[in-house]
Amino acid sequence: MEVRYLFHSGFAVDTGAHLLIFDYYKDTPRGGKLADGVIDLAEISGRDVVVFASHSHDDHYSPVIFGWRGALPRVRYVLSDDIRTREEAFRIGPGETLDLGDLSVRALRSTDAGAAFLVRTDGKTIFHAGDLNWWHWNGETDSYNTRMARDYRREIDTLRGEKIDLAFLPVDPRLEDKYLWGIDYFMRAAGADMAVPMHLWEQYGLIGRLRAEETAAPYRARIAGYSRRGERVSL
Picture 1 (cartoon, rainbow, N blue to C red):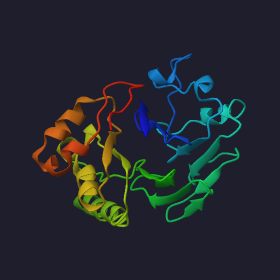
Picture 2: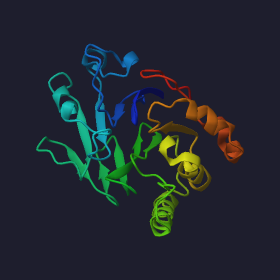
Picture 3: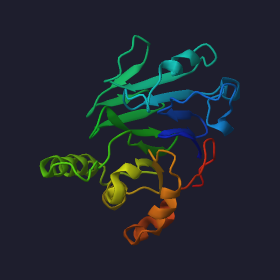
């Protein structure tokens, strides 16, 4: 697989037979290429493309993706069911599964909005968390944070026993010292051959900080890194 970081929680995953695009919204600079973190239709013309949007927040979804149909005759869209659009797309909600023949999707319930996706295609299993995370906020009420811990762990626990090749997981600097709680629980409970931090708000140095954490020692070598838009993620 080849993975390219687009922006924020947006990634392009080339599995060979398919190009999977997750949570794409930043469509600038105009005339940009994949190497700039921008989908250039000429670069992917003729590909079997599947576009995923995990929820309606504007840092995860933009209607710009539907403008690709004219140039990509084999494009398909898989949207969380909280996204309101009249465009033709496959819709999936938490707890549901979708079988497209060459690709299957299972949706988990987000702890924020929409869904997370467990995608199987071309012999690979890929997890994109969207905004499913352990959102423990310093300053929030104990009841909120207790509920968050319960809800996050419940969803991730459903992945125990899965063989996940690649997982995209939020590592959000706004959570301060709790920024790694979500990825840490995921890697211990479910695990993945490679984990790609996302939702970094361009604070790419957080990946190095995560790798250096004593807590991350059991899976440190499986944390992928990147430092700019358009970069190929080293797996």
